[in-house]
Figure 1 (tube, rainbow, N blue to C red):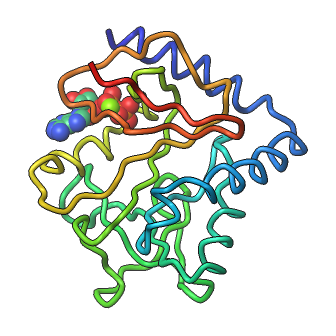
Figure 2: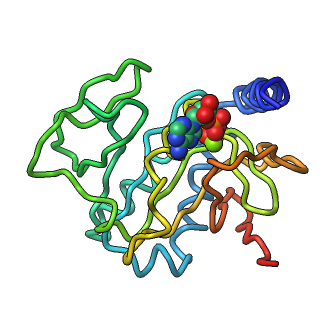
Length: 197
Ligand SMILES: Nc1ncnc2c1ncn2[C@@H]1O[C@H](COP(=O)(O)OP(=O)(O)O)[C@@H](O)[C@H]1O
Ligand SMILES: [Mg+2]
């Protein structure tokens, strides 16, 4: 199972990193167009997203669009005490940033801008591979799975939406009991909504 997961990760990451700068720029623009018409986005005031790396679909244009729309944007930060978990902090043009151990910039810890999961309307989740059923394979850290463990019990919970390039779709993602499925996946040209059995 692990070998299978790792080989999918390796293969898709390679594909994703082959996209040219131009293709990435076009994808980022198309993503804004897709997201701007999504009901979950239109109705959201508090949106958590992430800064792209490793060939991921570029989220910066969409973040700027959110700011223009006066929506509040939050970014994940590695939890300082609970290993393997994430916290979400507000992100504005003025937020002081620092690189985490993966060299990904994140907001500096600030108790005033910490946002509990229950306050988020929408949580965009990065992924390496996805399938038509909303299953998600991440980079292998399990950060989102751990952070969202009790998510189903929350009275108020954010919509969970994955963002990906089209080339990240696979026939079937191998899932385990801890994997949290996505409600939708948005790519530059389509919205994938799993059919509930
Ligand atoms: N809720 C959880 N509690 C404890 N460990 C977890 C949890 N979710 C994931 N993990 C651990 O994190 C590791 C990576 O998870 P995985 O789902 O493969 O990563 P990703 O979701 O990033 O692809 C796994 O070894 C798994 O046991
Ligand atoms: Mg997982």
